[in-house]
Length: 349
Image (tube, rainbow, N blue to C red; front, top):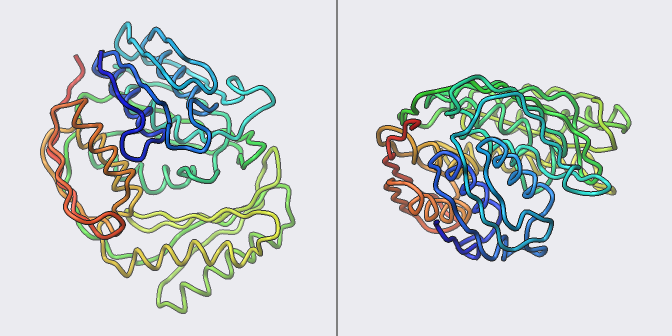
């Protein structure tokens, strides 16, 4: 059993999710102590507990410590990941409902299901666009194309938007089975056009128009073409936000009571322009999310990012403990960095 200290590095939920995925794939049990020790509310929260139980269901894992606020977890897989039709609802782990981030749960189950030996259909219920997590559109428009270049094939569909604090969002995924991942070459891709969506649920229709209009005007003034679609969508509760994307980069901003729609758009545009002007290959979040599949892949590749995060450094340190991968990171925390990954050449079985 691999014992992991949840206080390592960034000390958040990524340590748990990465360990869940790799335990299911490798069959190696693990014990995670001090779960999410560096968070304001340590221990397992509803979205984390949902991820634990979701991955456990894929591989018949025995669990110890699978409870809300638990700070120690033991996870013992009993079989390889199994394909199937699955539904995972964050509200099952939280009385009264939760807007726990379903795309973080998706990240935990994606890699085991890719090697499950058959097609899987997954329905996720909870928060689709919430703070401190990748929104649905980031995974669909930025991460998915990058993963596809390695050989990971899956489709996503947003059925209903879910915002904090009510949640109630629904996203579905169809995941195809693979035999291996291959490390692709990465390069800087110039942003010929910024695309995006500005959306609200249960709020006036002028708000998405104002977000989209402000973002378009700012991007045009900076010399960039833009196609940002305003939408008034279905959702269980009120919410607003804007998601922008370019090749290998995505940026979002969520509304809140008292914050003008124009300022929501300005925040997302500022991050977008900073990334474009830097000339890096991938944004800070994709730099982190590429690590796990590249650590499993066949081959070696390198890429640059505009902002090295503690999240990325923590994930790299953890991956070195789980699989036979080499990850070299050159750069200072908070600044530009180059990441070089040699994969372990994982194949199922």
